[in-house]
Image (cartoon, rainbow, N blue to C red; front, side, top):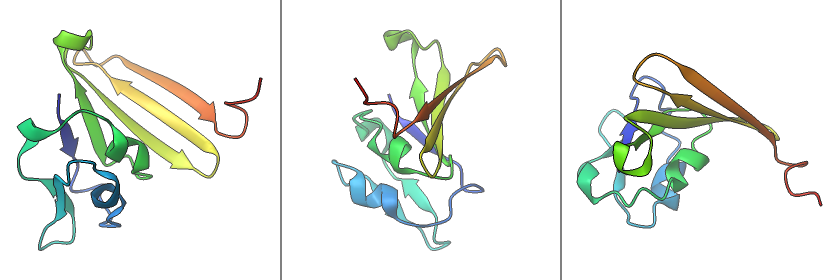
Length: 104
């Protein structure tokens, strides 16, 4: 499992570099996030969850049932939208309200 970072969506906010438990993410000369050694990624998705701009996606390989899909997220205040993009062009969206998600 590894991540992909869209250079066009990245704003260079550095939040992903702060939350990565493996310290694998850096900021390049263009002030955009990158991962130098993608194979070292643990697949924890901390950076995916932290990126408010949907610039980071997690590769969901066949070994975990993802069949090559990519998972990304976009945050707007209390709403978190998870997007799963399948290789066949089919997409699935999951919308979660943070304030409502942990109520019992």
